[in-house]
Image 1 (tube, one colour):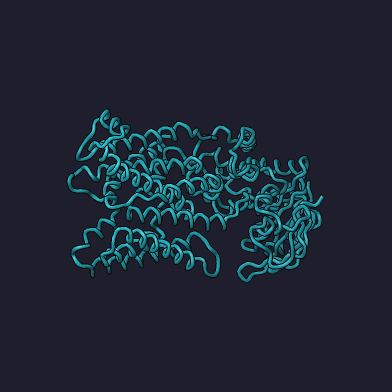
Image 2: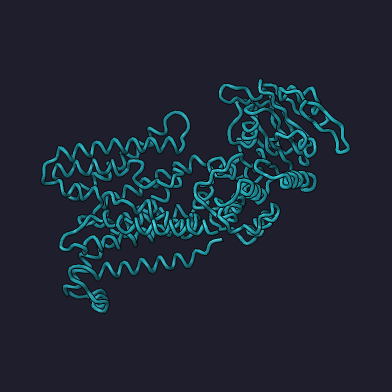
Length: 255
Length: 328
């Protein structure tokens, strides 16, 4: 079933064309990767999908409803976004930060219930941070902060996860576990994930579909099979790439 | 998770104690039993008059003003995402001061003084709102810069009035600028304003928690950031306007009280905001009691005392807290 649908959206930022008349249909069970060079508009496209900025033309449908007609709170119940940067202005504890993920599910008048706390603790367990629940976020390392932000998103438990460079600051093990987790979630819990990535080989391993942003307004979308080839990727990154078949599948390396 | 009850109960006790001290201490000091009998009895004694006609109205004004300032400061800090923000940072007190000083230089009565101070504050709020809300986005940085520059403009006008004013009203003007409760009339409106504001902030407190995680994060978590910010600006400014109208620019309470509470109990606004009101009220009440007794029969402007108490206390907490982080 289609979760989010873009109908002929055009997105420009600072006189730069990110995409023109882009059509996309993202269904549950799929994991999409957005690839492209620095500054081509990967984050901008992600924020447009999240409804944080409006497209210059076209419309975005979330569960068949135009996103402009849905309240922010309702959107947040269906769709969660992991930002590239976190900007806490006042220190708060790890568990309190993760509990903010429950915000869209709680009435204005209510406080977090024990069930919310349970969900938050489980999310912390998923990112292996449960033992740091009472630490202050500003005492954590970059990677640990990123894992807290991910736990907060997991606690939000939306249907659609938008991840902006989810792997930043993470060590190898946590990178793999994270992508494994979202890939597993998409297959088994009727969710889908759209994420910006810089690692082609991780994209090949964990994504089912790709959006390639070339920077001159050209955007390609399709399955991994259709898009992951030397010619397209070399054009995308403006750098020659070579494909090597290995026993772990195809690997792309720079020449 | 927070445990709100112990903190709030201790702050309520602190408030009661500060009222008892404010009622008993002064040029005519009352023992506790004298205080009780004078308060309860329906009599014409001198103690009764001192308490109900001199000390109670002033204590009440001090407490309410402190509560208004601390709440406004806490809201400004979230709104501007800046720990240095205080109730006066956006020029509300500047507008009020210019209008108040102007009416003093004309030799108008106290009633006029409050009225014109309030009008000046409102004018400044509208000015800052209009100028920062023109074309383009309405973000904290633009609001902060607009407010700070308007405040600087008011500052220049204040200096102009002070330097061109005759000797006689000058002392009163300086006291007003430093924050002073000795001439304030108890207002019946401001406690209602404070209660309504507390009620509103209680509803939006969790959204404020989310807003401190950043504008984008807040939007992504379902908060409608723009209306929330506009509401915060108007609410915080109005609270400041009421406080300034009652007591002039009492410094420090609005800056320091929210930070003291953040250091003690964290940044959850559902606890922080009511706690700020109680601590701000108590702190200003204790300061005012000291202001009228330290060098009696002379009186100090209360703003001087709040800083004398607030600075060392805050530095102590800050050191303790950062020391803990180093050891952790």
